[in-house]
Image (cartoon, rainbow, N blue to C red; front, side):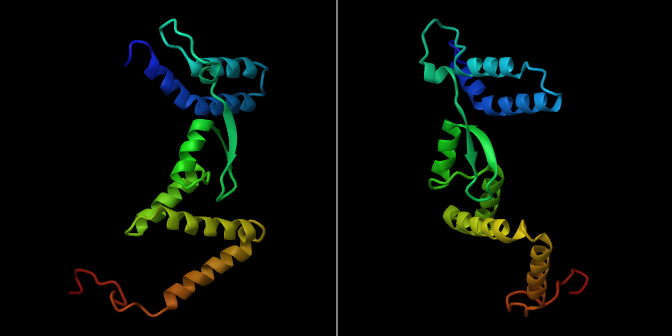
Length: 172
C-alpha cells in the first residue's frame, strides 16, 4: 500500500455507495433514530481523502457524489457514483444497465460463440421490454404464453444434428 494513503482512499471511494446503501437501509429498518444524517455525512467526508500527507485535495475529490441511475433494460434504480455510472455506460455503449441485467447480458454473450455484447444487450432489452409491457400487467397471461412457447419448442421436430431422444451409455 502506498505510504501516503492513495490506495486506501481509492478503496474507500469504491465501497462508499455500498456502505451508504447499507447504512441507509439499516436505519430505515430500525425506525430511524435521527443519527442517519450524521453517519452519512461522516461517510461522505471519509470517502474523499484520508491520505497521511498534509497535501490539500480538491473539494470534488473529497466528497463522492452518489446519484440515482435507472436501468435502461428493466427500469430498476440503483445508487452509484458518477465514476461507476460512467464505467458502466462505456461498457454498454452509452446505456446504463443495472448489475442484474449486466450479468444477464454477459451470460447471453457467453452463450453465443462470438460473445458480441451489443447483440446480447439488444436481445436482453427486447425481453425486458416485452416483460415490462405485458408481464407485469398480466402475469397469468404472460406465464401461459411462456408455457405455449415451451410446448411449441418441445413439439417441433428435432434437428438432424441431434438425436430425437437422449442416448445413454447403457443404450449403446
